[in-house]
Length: 245
Image 1 (cartoon, one colour):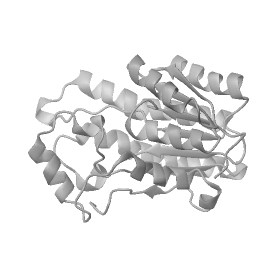
Image 2 (image 1 turned 45 degrees about the vertical axis):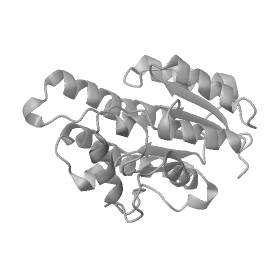
Image 3 (image 1 turned 90 degrees about the horizontal axis):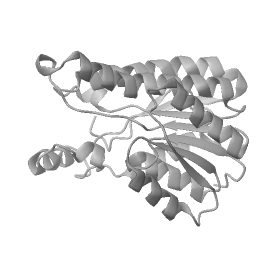
């Protein structure tokens, strides 16, 4: 697909699903502003590896839970490239915690990044995105699986699906679509951190294809939703999980 002249923002763009999405969009000619939260090295690697792609990639450090950082992210897209056509909210944090062991600080931070951060980006997109734009938020298949320790994370992701369903109705008259992609287990640092080899093998075995998802599996779904071929998919959640749920 030729996306020359289009502009995207991808939060959490320096690693995993976000990084693969940035590279896909830039390879198709889209100019991309990618946010990252902490790893300067990962951000620089993204810049280096995208240097020869048709679309330009710029990175900006941003805590999506902070309104000022999100404002700056959208300002960057407008000032550098002239507008915004695509938003993918891939930034997130996760630490499995049983309710009996959770505290307010853990709750506040996970909700702040996963739910508030997505809300701030969606609100900015509703105000700033050009007509005909595409919005994709990342949810999770654990909403269906309901594993212990995922209560706070699932609460945030469930809220994201609810927000997207309403946002899609609010911006539809401008031919902007809004949808979610809900990955299953994907072989990224985000998923692998803190898990044993046995845990990982069990998750892979639970899929009909007998493997974990890869970032490009999820990027395929995102790429469909931001394309012209998905203009009739509105307010939906695509469960890109390899049949795990």
